[in-house]
Length: 162
Image (cartoon, rainbow, N blue to C red):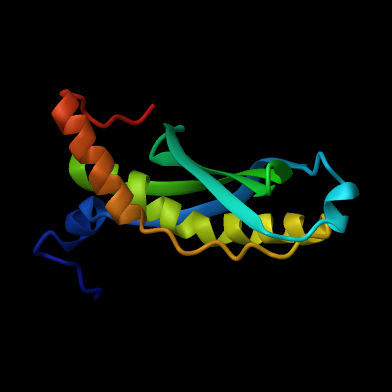
């Protein structure tokens, strides 16, 4: 005789929240060093500008694509030393979450997973361009998500998945 759950355990497990990383990949990649090789002969006093963006898209079923875009421009004095842009993406299986938890997962949790991969890709490109690695500082996606949520609430908008 096999034991059968009698208290609805199977149904509860099916309804339980699920999260699974399916794939991480580079969606788009760009590196430009417009002043090479002259830039290598100058004193190196860089200033770094970082633009960060995320977007998410519902795929079939309970699958979602999240894309983290990092654009870095490094100037040496008044000249652009290099520009690098990476779109680091992931496919995630997410189910059983309420709207608020789903929005937070897609807007903060998934980008937190993708960021180290994007940072490593950027460093690899920069070093291959013969520049010092950037080693971008960690990003607090929870704080960025909270700021964006507050901005949307003040504007009367609601977070949506496209």
